[in-house]
Length: 479
Image (cartoon, rainbow, N blue to C red; front, side, top):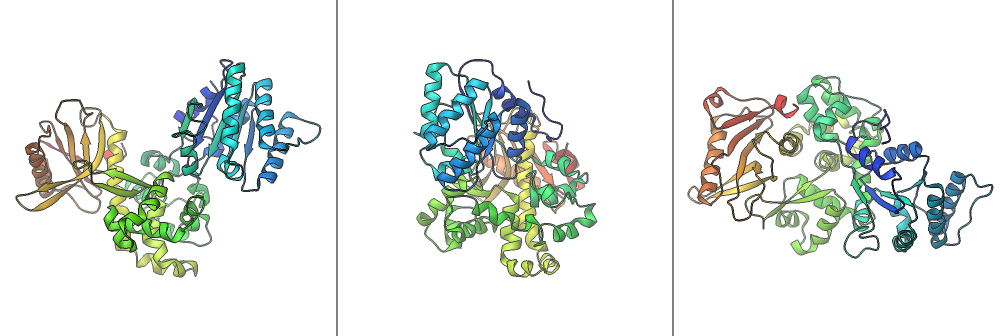
């Protein structure tokens, strides 16, 4: 198998799948689809793979069909060492030549930013499907990778009745680094500082070069780091959240999409609350919610205890930071008044950005430590337990279920509460214990349920005598 280049950080799983795809072990044609939001290092992987295999790499740009054909023809001619540029009258001819070249030279062919091409030439997926089917009938050793950053477009390539459905042998999605990998990548060893930084830049690899490898030097440097990077109008990171929406072809009414994201970032996570915030009927925002989900900027999560009730969360931390901190004060930031804006943002950053993000990190922790509660999790989420006696709702931040078994009670491995800025004690445990008793009455299997307190600042002495309670702090979170 092709060795992973030393300059590629992590991505072992992804490289193994790509290297396996690039191997020519049979005469059957191969089609692969690789997607991932911008800045995840997808192009870096694709270029590295093409270079190591001697394959063809073409990155499309926004252009007309005619110009795209010309650019593609020139790139393919240069790759094969043709004495004169190719001239293709149509994509039919161009794709036929691509497949013929791949089969003859037994080389990998990579088309990056495929959505740009399919937008200019909507028939392209059908043309590729036809040539794949012909290659199958001829036992032609073709290898083609289609890559793209427009998640809504890439997600439809193999879905439903799409022409390429059933043709691909690889479907790979590059996701941001988890919070542990992100801390290693940024070289942040102080765990509290790592959480604060991750709440802004998340695990997107390209954001480090965006700030010219400027990493906060320590806890005392965090505020200055925020002001000189993400809040500085002279850095690429400053406008990145706006570009994430602008790059998605489906988003034509950007103001409405920003309003929906702002609603979620402000804590309005149900469909009804979002519609009330933006001043529209719930039925009027259905399309916007669906598009944001397709673009992987928003995700819908069912309540762990009431699957019919769903909430929405923003997937990209930088978008949350932008909607809560930057967008309301955009004019001030553009005029270079980051210090004033950041000084006025402490409470909103803590309550609307850092706190909810820390909750999400605690849910991710369970997936990173699958045996932590004595069994492989089947589902990790959050939910609300209604207390009819006290007429209150108990919000459980981290719910861990065992895998569901037909005909058996749903087994709850853990119920957890998360506090970023508060030391946790017996009062928090009492709420969890009450939630466990209520779930027991509702028919859940809670015999082995572990009550878990997650805190960013620590725990008071009252927890030491609680036998059925587990405390997870920053040391446990980062392993």
